[in-house]
Length: 105
Image (cartoon, rainbow, N blue to C red; front, side, top):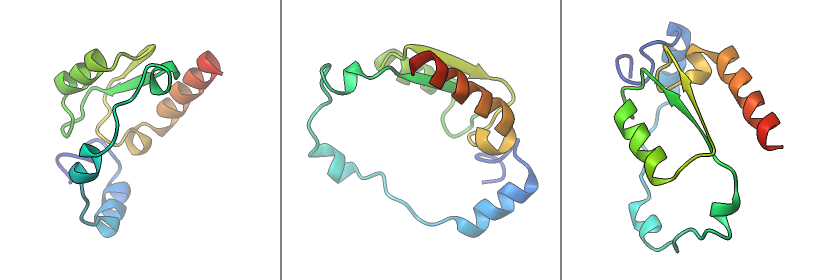
């Protein structure tokens, strides 16, 4: 976790993450039974994507692939952010979220 999720985050957030970690699931079985999203439903909602440039869990190339395959109305890039921008750059993330809210409200 130190080298992949929290590499740019404060040590206190890494330690808290280590204390709170638990096993998870990708819900592959559940997702295979879900109907595809429609343009009338999900497609009608404006989407924004914040690219975390130093994310080692979802590399920038894969983030770009996700954007290309599910286009966003707004793409914001955050330099020097790992997979946890709420810890390593909380003020900058907050500013971007406010920007997104202002744009689409």
